[in-house]
Each structure stands twice: as structure tokens, then as C-alpha cells.
Image 1: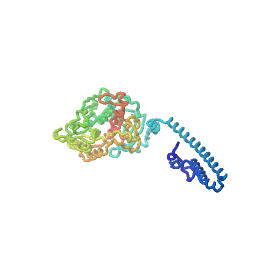
Image 2: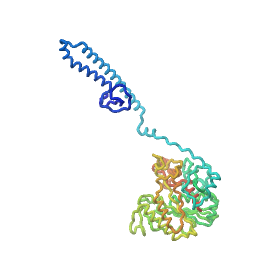
Image 3: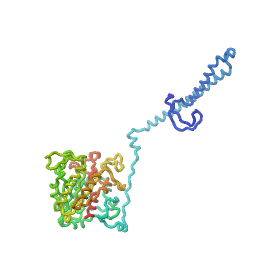
Image 4: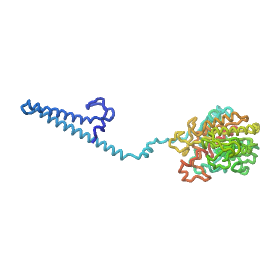
Length: 488
């Protein structure tokens, strides 16, 4: 039974229980219309019965026949209305019960319902292959570093792209970045070209580059991302070097690739902060234990002297925490001071810049600095709600000018400011914008940890093991080197 205070009625354009236009359900404190009519009839009968004694006196002790008939008729009418209303009410209740049973039968657990009602993500079809006509290429003109911006451009998919190397053909690629060899099932990330809006970026020509490097010493300096760029450069060049005319020497600090026929070396020096730190040799030292000597660089820099081309980078290690432990003078002499990461970065970069200005002859040595290699740690940045960083991403972010949370603009401003004040000209190769789009090209779970390839169980736990910092090779670092080649 439904009580009067819980009944659901329908709001109408009239306040009576007569025929009217329905608007919307609303809660009411009044009884149903049928029950109102029943009560009205009973009320009339009761009024008549109250008047019976007076009528009986006037009628010599007998109630008028018309009154008796009215009372009997009223009671009968009330009974009919009540019965009809009860029948309607019963039908409503039965329908309501049937509806509730149907809802209960077809309902799913809350989590399952959410999963099924979530909008299905559309699979983005491959963009059309970029076809640059001779006329369009001529209109853009040749690459000129003083005129062309490498940040203004777009990624174009080109399945017919000829790769200079693979992680099977280049023997020097570390397992950490050998995604195809490590079992990555897709390969579309390999076939994207970065096109500039206003200029033609020249294709990497290994043979031509080797001629430019003949008799020269080229060195990359920085962290593991810079090591990836060095490996990419070596593999690009190696495709034009006979097997018998090359050597490779690897060590923790300094690695050297030599193209013997050209008397050219392409080297990598490990210095993730550029300045000295207690973690330079103990790379497994946790972020909490790292202490930076922000005013010292000589232990590293003595290895940089004599290079004809220097390519520096430093960023991701500075972002291991919001505060950096720093010291001046010998480690441990006066304890350490904790500084904001960007403040410590500025101090360290100024120390590096002062050394370059004091020790590099710009007529003999060309100096480059790579901008931030962005990370992709928040899938919400590119609209992938509920995603796990870069895990299972197979296409670039195509939105023009996309910028996520993986590149700290303040750190970039520090680089621009420090380089702008230097005596020795340093070319800043701004690869950050083009890298922002390439959420698809990280090593993800096709990598190693602690020197061991990820197991199937670890790959099944992407929340813990997905790497969205380092890049597969071949991959994005090849484009960085294409830009470097254009400047050389």
C-alpha cells in the first residue's frame, strides 16, 4: 500500500482531478484523485445522515424516502468509485513491481555498467602519406639555420620511408632502446617524418656527413637521452661504413666510435648534470642521496678539450625532485644546501657556460645544445583519460602546437637566458616541440630494468614498468640528428 505522503502524482495545468494536460511527475502530499472522489461521496452521505433526526421529526418519525434513496445511492457510488480506484491503484503497483523486477534482472554491477557505457575510443586511421611536389619544395626553399624554425612543422606518416638502420642491422644499439628486438608488435612509429612549415629539412646523408667529419673529433655530452642520440648518430653513420673500417670502445664514462677510413671519431661522455656530482660514477644512487657540486666542472670538461664539434644536453636528471642538494667546494666540507631544481639548474648551467667561454675557441670548435627531450607521464594531457602514461600509444599527437606537462618551460627559459649571455656562440637545437607529439615512440614496456629485459609478468604491469622517458631506436632521436646534420 502507498501512503498519502509517498504517493507520486502528475503535475497538471489545473488543480482539480478533472481532465487536464500532464506536465511532469512530482511529489504530492494529497491523496490520489480517485480516493478524493470516494471521500467526497462519503462526506455527502455523512452530511445527509446528520440531518436524518431533524427530518424524522418533521416527517412524523419517518425519514423521507428520497433521503434514504440518496444515502443508499451515495454509499453505492462511493463503493463503485473506491473499487475502481483500488483496481487502478493495484494495476499501477503491479506495473511498478514488474518494472523493478525487469530493471533488477537486466542491471549490471556498477563497475561493469561504467565500463560498458564509457564512450568507445575511435581508432584514428593512418594520416595520408605526405607527398611534397617539386613545386612545393622549391617554394619552401633550402634549409637556412638563420631563417628556418625547426619548431614550426608537422609529422607526416610515410610508410615508404627507407630506414638507414634497424635494431637488427646496427650492432651498437643498447638493449634498453631496441624496441623491435625486444618484442614491440607495432612498427608504425618508425615511419614518420618531421616537415618544416617554411623550409625543406635535408635528408640525413651518411656519406656526405663522413666527409664533413674527416679528420675530426665529435663528442656528445650528457645523460642517457643524449646517449640515445649518440647511438642514433653512430648507427646512421655506420650504414655507410664498411664493417672492417670501424671500431667501437665502450666504457662507463667515455665511449668512442671510430670510422678509420675517415680518421673520424664520434664520442659520448657521461655527465648527466654537466657539472660534477657524487652520482657521476654511482649512477644507481637514489635521488635522495645525490649531491651536486654546482660550481665545479673541470673533472668532466678536461675530456671535452680538443673536440671539433660538441653537442651538450642536460635536463631529466634535474627533474628527479623539486629540491636539489648542492654544495660549493669539496664534497662534505660544509654540508649541503637544498635549492629549487630550476635554481640549481641555473647555477650549474652558468658554471658550464663559464668554462665554455674560457676554454673553447669558436673558430676551431662548434658548440650545440639540445633542448628538452619531453616526457609523457600524464595521459590526460593528450585526452587519454584512464590511460597509463605512454603505454599502448601507437600514433603521435597530431594537434598542431600541442604542449603537455613533460617539458618545464622555466627550465627552457634558463637555457635560453644562459646561452644568450655567452661569449662563445652556442646553437640551441630546439627539438622540444616536435618531440612533444611523439607519445607513440617511447620504449614503454619493451625495454629493460636493472640490466635485465622486462619479463612477461612485468610487461603485464605497465603501471609500474612503463618507461616514457627514453626513445626507441630507430626513432625520434634520428630526427634530432637530421636537424643537427642540417646545421652541420
